[in-house]
Image 1 (cartoon, rainbow, N blue to C red):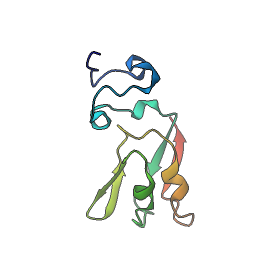
Image 2 (tube, one colour):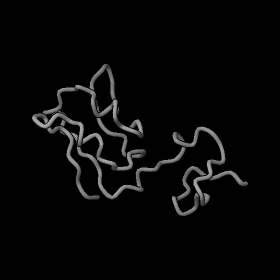
Image 3 (cartoon, helix red, strand yellow):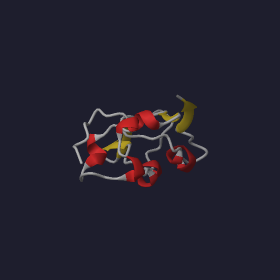
Image 4 (cartoon, rainbow, N blue to C red):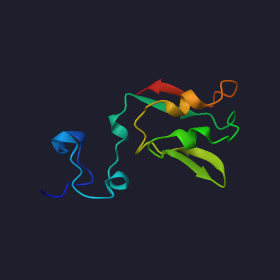
Amino acid sequence: MSKIRPDASWKELPEGGIIPEGGTSATFKTGDWRSERPVWNGESCIHCLTCWINCPDSSILVVDQKMTGIDYDHCKGCGICASVCPPKVNAITMVTE
């Protein structure tokens, strides 16, 4: 099997979920797969980090125990971060791409 280029589109990936080598999650930018994206409001965020704990793609950026943004290169737009954000805070909302 040939090596997959880091800039390969999802259409160029092998069929059947084959993972040809280790460490591909950091190499491949999978954010272009999403149809919705989370938008973070830093002014209303209370930095509870519930979004960070629940994000399956490790796309919540944290520095010194405070959320600083979202890694859109790897966020697939699942919406988990928005759904676990405390309702009274509502610091993360989903918007259509």
